Image (cartoon, one colour):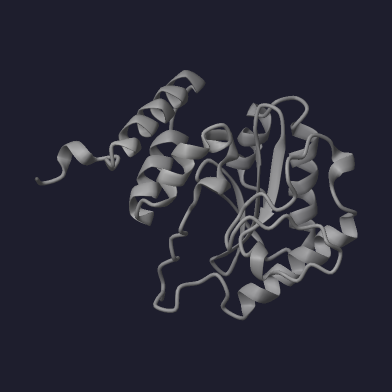
Length: 203
């Protein structure tokens, strides 16, 4: 079933991106009817029994698509660009539909990712009813960190909880101006070793 929040995400995307992410959305949902469409960290993700399978996003000049466990996924057709254990941009920067792999190949990979999920990959061993929170890194958010390699390296040294706090704060911004201000503030604070809520931490 389609999520109306994803409808809104597509409508807000740049004109060049809308046919790309609309195509990816339909392809994913067609591959397995048990996939659940959700918005996480500001962009569409697709889960199977609570495990993230894949996701896509749209930026000013490109789109991205990736598998949550891309590093563990078999790559018989050599289409994956590995960027760490849980990278979200396995297909690189996508600017038009012709840059995507063949539909059947992409569906083959999605089904393989679902098989990994069925075997328990991508879930915390201690997780029960609660969905495990991902250990997000800078390479999952090229729209924030691509031009700031120094800040990206510092960000990745922060504890997962601090990284999530910063990313949630940035992705919840209601306007591009607010988002850019928060990114600038984050870079300033992390270079000083400060968490998002450093003002409220006990000294």
